[in-house]
Length: 410
Image (tube, rainbow, N blue to C red; front, side):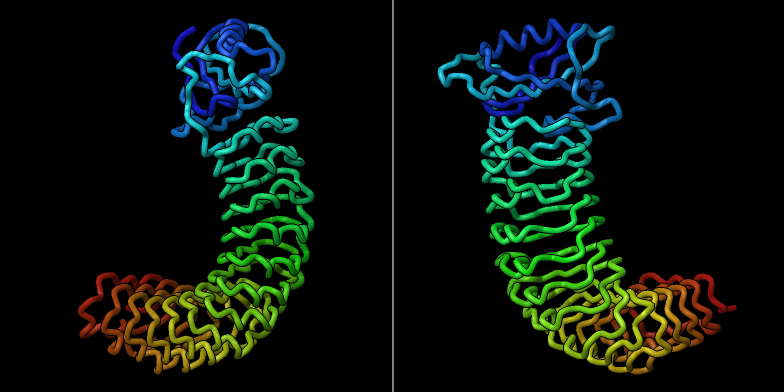
């Protein structure tokens, strides 16, 4: 057997990696090291170089639980997740196994029929990634992982959120991506430390009102969901800073309480909304706004009253005009327009004195507003815009990048 054990976990649960041509001999050595009849050994076949910086096996197409015994025909790297559930505390082990507590565990794409209960012994674990592991549930022992701060459950088979997850009161970041989840339980309110919730590609039609009882929630991302409504309780999230709702085709209106969020800074709306209410002007701390919506009948002039707005993105709009009041956005630094239907922009926009980036693509503009007042402009990008005259950039001393492609400029 070549090489020393690769040490990762604590004195009761640890990962060992050996290079050997004989699997059975390696198992015997492990059993001698553990010196306990209560140990459970889970085996992974790995190729050389498949251990990442944290000591966690990197996923590859041959990853998976090993079956049975037998000897390897050629030298491979073997990883053993060794779980000592009931070993006496006085069990003596060589110094080679006096190893630090594990804080991060990444088992991405390692297929398990079910996760071993003993992983719940990793009391210092703060980050857990279980992406594409084929899991339908988590062991009850996972409720003991009280220090978990970040968890990703992407691409598994959970139809309901595992009960253990709702017991992690120190959890800050939860990612639910590509899961057959149909709902979230009311118990989600127990995640009193949750700051960021990411949900994408699930079957959730309605969020529980208990979302509004998450006192520290700052960021909510909802992408490609069959949502029909957002709970009005969202207005109770006084620390809420970022909302991204994209590709939710059944969501055609937003709760009135959304416009009362006092600290909202980022709002991304890729939704088939017919209107955006004038109450949007109440979001006085909003810094970034994205509107991507071919169904929108009008861009509200009240956006021009968002005194803190620094970045505005307008995509796929079928409106024929944009409001002149947007020229009042004295904090605006970046303006992105993509796939618009209008042939001109208001001349009042020449008053956007703090604008640094003007980016327009795939929009049938025949002329551009005067750029003379944009003294801080650094980037001008026009692509697939049929203007026929080169924009006058005289006096724009900070302008560093000009791109004019697929235009009608001679």
